[in-house]
Image (cartoon, rainbow, N blue to C red; front, side, top):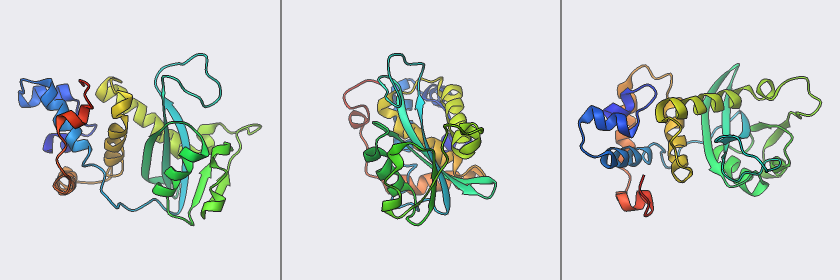
Length: 225
């Protein structure tokens, strides 16, 4: 736990194996995934105030698909809380598609009702007003500003996430385990201003002891990492 929390950008299974002198990569991989499952606190507070929400793809270029469809890339949705000109906490999750049936539940679980939710003009967000949110829309078509200027916080988070996945994990993250890497990134990002690594260690320890055991077989679902 101290190794995981003391590394500013996190560590890979290979790095953990080398640091601890483990004979098995599988052991290091398993330990890290057990800890990632402890990085989400049950009943954590939802984002509030003004929140930007947008989706993005993770993966390489994909040909033969239209709009916001995807065949091989992973589609994720990101919520970033505004804090003046800066940014507060974030939430993110992999979603099967960009429909209202996928986007609306994410917003409901991540953002307090009554908050201002700022999105682009995608139709998948049309239900937000009826769900008790103040829906602020920035239409991309015909706008002189770029998407990263209209929704700067989520675009910054996505850029940092992609850099982290490539830099720390060399992009070798399977879709089946992606949500847990997203949890780790959010855990670290939301505590980026913490002055002491020990506070992250304490929080992870506190949350880990509240979880039920997660056997290796359940982690991999019958597949090797």
